[in-house]
Length: 65
Image 1 (cartoon, one colour):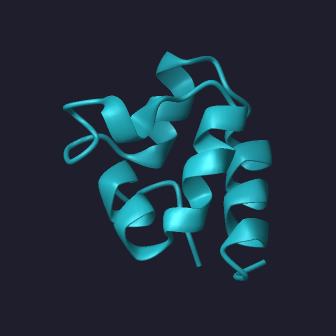
Image 2 (spheres, rainbow, N blue to C red):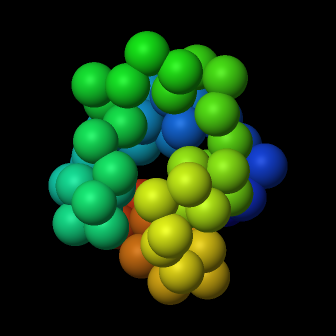
């Protein structure tokens, strides 16, 4: 399960299919140098993205939800 506390780079590394979800929500995380340090929750907050919607879609695409 992908959680708000996971690093964005960890999510992308373990579930590369989630790149499209991050892009869909306006997060260009695969190009961001701080993805290794930034949690999903922080990225959503910075980009004013609904965290619950993002997590739901990430988990759906990753087959975890």
